[in-house]
Image 1 (cartoon, rainbow, N blue to C red):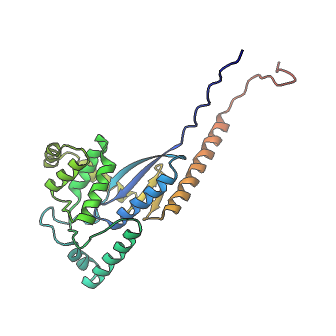
Image 2: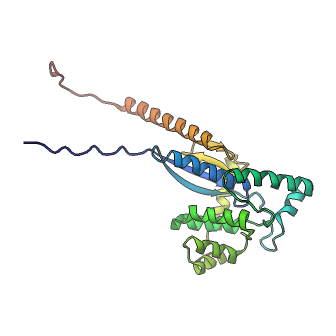
Length: 250
């Protein structure tokens, strides 16, 4: 008589929470997101990465309406049109290397508070990751005004959020206190530049690192977490009577 032996269950992948602090008008945030995604795909069989986007405002004084070309804002911030054009050309070239087609000549200066409030709402409905991508694409590739409520509603609708509900939400104050508290949290945590990737609430990885760097950092962190778990298990281990091949404890 033969016995049927069940298959061993597949090992559960460890999980890692990843908070990505970024702004939707930050070119390196879009580039960093692409590089992160390359790393995440390479690690798909090793770890379950739980990603949430956190707010940061590079230009909190931008007016909520009356958007102007971003090159004008860059010229004022970085010391003239020549310097602004050089910065835009550089990030456009780098972005192309990561598969992104920037058209920053179309980009408009925008206040991103509404966009961050919408991302907060989208987190609750399960649309945040898709919406973040759509916002970045709209800003850097399409020249959309991501500070305009009607534009935001249309972009949200693109990822499955009802436009009428989004407009009603943006017309209210919902989420404003939360976003402002997270902005203050970032300041208190000395997050002064974006993108910043915070892994497991403990380790900070600043900047648009290349995919290999992300992969190496995550693997080191997983090894460290595994060692910490083993050390904790050893500290709490208990023993009782056992039998081996020769005798039993008495």
